[in-house]
Image (cartoon, rainbow, N blue to C red):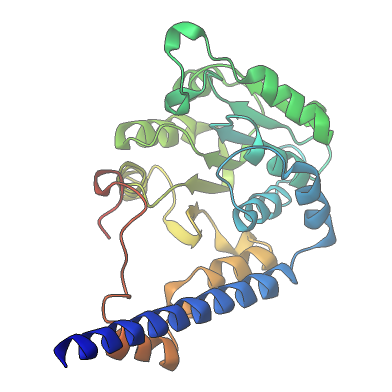
Length: 282
């Protein structure tokens, strides 16, 4: 009898787990379709042109950068720290609608820590970067700085920076150096975005920059991108994206809470997809 009970319990657990997973997937799919209905025709066209470029930027984050870039006025430029093959660069350049705005792509273009070959093999990503920029028709809006962030900041003589997007080395020391190095070049009320703020080094570096008064406080978050600077400059679409990423706005409903607390008490938290040493413990 005990074996029968255990078998039935196993079947019930499997069925409930499958139901929970199915409902969660359906909910997430519905939320994503609803979010996409708010996308502008301009961004949809930009995504269709540039989505082929490899990288880790998801569609919502791409839309965020596209919309932030549209706020940069004439007389100011955009700086991107960490360009890789140009996926994020593409959306910054396509979103920069004001005449004369340039995207300064800062990267050693050696593949960084992500490359799978030895340093001796001279892994150069700049050729593919420029092929991608030409493919989507934004090469004339982009200026590449083939060097490190701190070196580029020290020698920068361009226009004030209206938007700074940082996705470089994720150590606390490097993030702090990125922010403090570019701070003197920022326009008043500049908007800033830091990728991968869930990483421990990024989180600590950014919090130090804000605590020391080098950069303005963190004003919001869209997926893994943290936002600093005056939120009143955000386009309405950015406000919507930031609200959608607010944990308070996505708290579990009664059905989800029931499954978590009563049926699948272990389902509330799963294993992190990243090593604990690389993530913010919170």
